[in-house]
Image 1 (cartoon, rainbow, N blue to C red):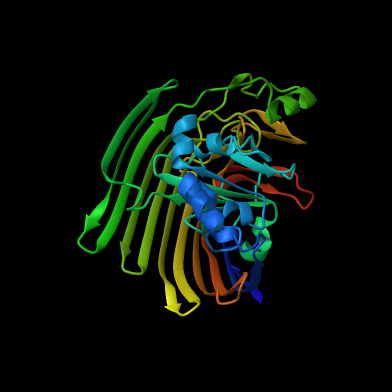
Image 2 (tube, rainbow, N blue to C red):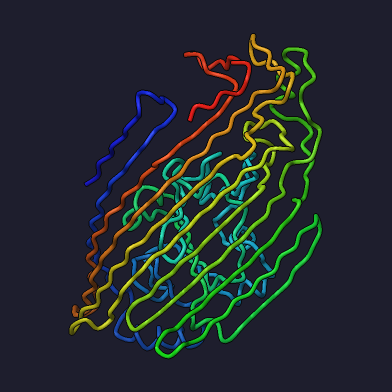
Length: 424
């Protein structure tokens, strides 16, 4: 059952509030694919391969990878260390059947599965952290201001290449990627690291795991900065308009704007049957890549704040043959352009209209998403396990702002308004 309510303040046409409520019901039955000797074989595989032999996102419950009813891949922390990957995109590029491309806006990664790929949005592949979706309400994907995800605190990456909508909804119809962060069992003591490289790239991180009495904890902090690799853009969207109207506004050829400052933090607490995850992601001064309108913009930047938290309870032996659990999750997302964006540079002509100061826009939005899940698993049937689940999502785009120096005609042609007007 799904409903949507949209409320627009008549006095402020630019302000839009959107709420989405969704109930999810799930009933699945999984049939063992091997005979009576399957369990000993699976135990041997687990001893030989550890976490790499199991996956949880295919059915919602941990099971041997070879018996998962999906085309799945698991990348462990050891795999990441062996390949020397430092960012999520580098690790995902090694997965067969998954292609990592890049869009013009901020060079944000686009994950394609079996040729299914779209831009600038990437809503066909669901990205999750510890089983909680990272998607935003406005675009349905991971958000414009992505700017990378470091791997120092990643324990494993689970990938489904193929539809996952039965478990995760319409946003997973091409595939699912679940990032599992390191918990108390993965960290023994304190680890720290420094890294430097080309393009003024510097990173430092600190993580710790251990126990305080009956409380298990893991904490992570990473800060980093880079100027970006500065790939040269020879022609852009403004070049095409210059050729058409005889202007000379384009800043191409020139370097892409790929610098950024980053902070990533995480906290994992476990007590008895309870588990709390908190993850904070901050991006500042994130460059716009080849420009948000495919026109070079070396000066504009975007800022992003993301907070993800989930509290869960699970009992693997609630009753004979029964296991159960529930979780409550919060996802806060805020994205803004502190200095506005240059959609087209100064002196550009768009149709019959000249923009002497450039075509300027400055959008911002604030989103909040709540998620409740509960499930029960029955394993008392020979060769089968039965999972029953129910969930509720509350998605709220509760604030939006913009300022710009143009309006659009009914035919979509931008008309300059002179000075920048604040529509908040």
